[in-house]
Length: 162
Image (tube, rainbow, N blue to C red):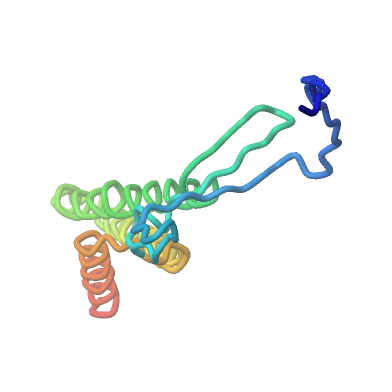
């Protein structure tokens, strides 16, 4: 019988200095066959399965990231101002102020300013929407996209007809 010496059970410590404290990670869900992962679906749930961990500040983020969220907010604010505030304000200006003879040329200039500004701001909002769509492959909001294209076409038609 051979005698064995017990192995020391001391923990192993390693010290490492991280050059880049920010790490990106992703996770996927898909079929597994014989302990081998298969191809996962390419839907928006899988393509957005990303995140970042910053070890120096102990912060983590998941999803599309800050840049997409900021552009999305800009898109929403620009289109709300254009289609929800300036365009109706221009229509109301023409409807209610043109009956006053004392505001005869002013109502028209105010109306034209509101409508023109609404179109310009709307073009900026529409272009940020196009940028969001091109930066987000696999994510498509069909109804929202169709409404945006329709509004943009009708707004452009109105500007061209005047």
